[in-house]
Image (cartoon, rainbow, N blue to C red):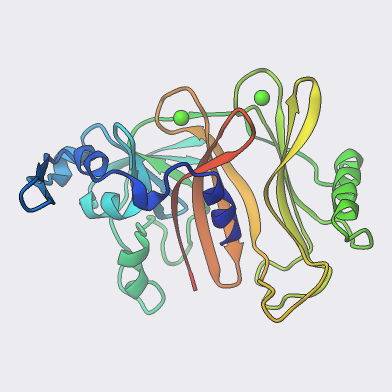
Length: 296
Ligand SMILES: [Ca+2]
Ligand SMILES: [Ca+2]
């Protein structure tokens, strides 16, 4: 949950501050302010109308939200879905075809109680062969460059070793999970995202020497700068030390057609996985836009 906290520091308007009018009107409802009773009345809510021209975003079977004149969160979108919507399905940026994705998993002891709360939709292959992470959208979208690099490249191993040394963990081994080369601002200069961690994905214990971070290297004014999206270095352990999270950058994609790329991050920790839709500002800070997942 720490990327969430980290990103939220950069939020200008927290999610709870999104104006009601914005949300309601995104759903095709009329909003009226009743001055005498000081209440807001929403005259109509038409899910079918809402879904017209909305781009509903599903990633790895989670409804992440939608775009329609603005971002709409997963709760509202899931309510509006009938389960008969047609999605474009992409896996690793490759278009797999159109599919109707039913709403909600069939009841079973694993997913039954969670499907509604977590806004899960059902891939065709469930449960025998769970679908790999894939992006499904009701409108077609444009992907950005997304090149996976060899995680043993000496230049990056040295770079990570330097970060560890700078953060009091010079003696720890270097483990790089992921190196992604992309160009999120399409200025012709690549940004590089590096995820490194020495924790197990399902780690349950905080141990001295653990680390996990996701960093973006970006050329700014002719110099490469590092922007941490998440970082946690366990140089000392106390009673209240928090478990580390584990992050990857999963997608670089323009979901709302404005020409700017959005990023989908996967956040994992002990018994939890979340997906975060974010965009990046020219100064390197990230804004969380939408968030959904499951965890305790
Ligand atoms: Ca760039
Ligand atoms: Ca965009």
